[in-house]
Length: 593
Image (cartoon, rainbow, N blue to C red; front, side):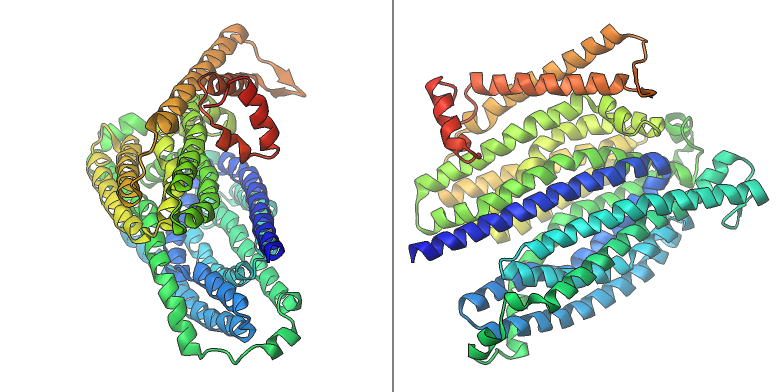
């Protein structure tokens, strides 16, 4: 029996590692796609792209809801009970559900795109990207049912492969499609003075006229990626005889009726769906309130908006897209990197906390909670403060072809950098609350958080002096409330008092030292280099030297600071690869808390 449990544990860890590697590869490929795409399309073009994607997320969340996790749980439960006929029945019922929800939500997005672009934004330039994005809703549904099926069988490889396939299609096709459309448009201008049916008088206007279609072309690659990923998973499902053999099916009892399976999927999916919808309200609120407020400012306070942004873009519809592109395409792209990383900590925390809480081991639960929160803050604090002090340098390095967008996005990212510290904690804490049976509280807290964010966005972004710079304020305040409420719920439920000095104060001290060293080294390198331009292979690498030097120095200083103030414990180190030996080494030198 012990051997069997051990094997199950190994399979789980191997599956987690496969997904983690796939996620890492996907993020690298995603960066290789998003960064050059932003430089290619500029602030206006990336504004079309990100708005279409954010609009898609709304319909995708509704269509997919919580069914993938429900499928996985029901499949896993059926396999454990050796009800193998139920596994295929669950898949078939889920497939029917997704055929309906996917089709309905795809049509709804198609119709909604016209209303959103023509009525709300009053700018038809958004339409091409929105319409090309619509099929993604359907194919994401098809992909989700297959991923849920394989995850329920504890086979994470198909999911991982499909993620990489999606990312590769996006990278290889997206940049090619977008650059081809821009080239075609500029050729049309040179030959006829008309770009995709729009008369233009100069190259700058010609380039702007190509951007709605170039953005749509980039999104077409995303849509193709979901189609190819879906095709791969469905092909893999047809050949998945190794998971459930004919002999296993023959020996299993008769399957449950479709109606019973449907009710079971619904019962498991609804709580997860509510949490997902509440969590995505932040994106929805940003998409509508910021766009609406900026549109109102441009119409009602044109003089001030011209004063703030007139040197970058002409007043009108393009100004709205430019500002939105700087916010969502530049600042938010950098901001989202850290919470995406720390979200994996929550996935790791869930099984351990669930086990210790279920058996009433309060001591082990406290140790696990403190460890995951400490690791999260040890990552989130230096990354967040680093983004704050090096905001302009990082944005200038990565988005060198969009200097106007960099200038607009810099103060936004500086504020968002501080916000990262609290946002990074959200997913790990929510995983802990789920482990102790408080999933319903998460939904309520997220709804209140959304209301706070809405109020700040609605009232502050509408003030000309604040405009887009107020958006991070709403995010910061709402997440401070969320984390505070989560921690209060955690303490009242478990009775565990978190060691605040170990979990937050020590990481904050080390993070401040880290950020300060990054600023000092970057400033010093700039002074030493001065106006000189350093080139390697004909490329200006002055900015790379300054930023890379600052980051390397900050990492070294941070590690030293963490060890000197003993910000990590032996339990934290043991979780690392070869952790036992490293913990023993550090413990001998009194460098562990």
